Length: 273
Image (cartoon, rainbow, N blue to C red; front, side, top):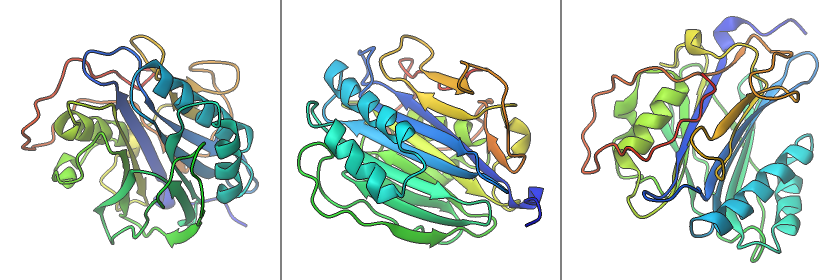
């Protein structure tokens, strides 16, 4: 199979912030490049630990560690492993999405995490009810296909889905995610958004990509900068990179938007820049 053309690029980035007034964040996310031959897929996880603060962060961390440890498995199996590992914790809502370079993908989720389309056709993806770690019942994997220009946003219930999230376009994925959280993040909860665009038609510039990034994790319990980018050797480490996949750095947000919620200074960056 030939190499993936740049026009079929995947761009992804996310942003998390804790409940205003708190340092620990009960939300987190993972954007992981899966190294396969001939081309890698992208794995996205969005986690919302029940409640907020340290105990919610413990549950979110446990979910991310489990996802990373089983990332090559089918999504429903990853989710069931997370259910087992989160038994001692409060539990969490968890959404998993895997996207191949040709636009084919799968989604599997439990709890209050939404998937919205910011551009292109509706995503048609949703989480089933339940709590990962305590009341997991049915698990369903949903196939989907992204066309060039499609942009999805996965967000926790700390972000109001009633806002005009599309008004944060255009911009680099992480910039758009931050705009969404700043504009429509709820004042009584942690908030996370991950933005995922496919193809040259997506209004997500590839030149904002962070070089050499293998994965990006928002670490809710860490002070100040809460994300680490890089390979297994540590933050910012270089490593194998699929040139068709871009994990973005943050750039200034120039989106025009209206919101009853003003951007809050408690927001925390999820970039290594």
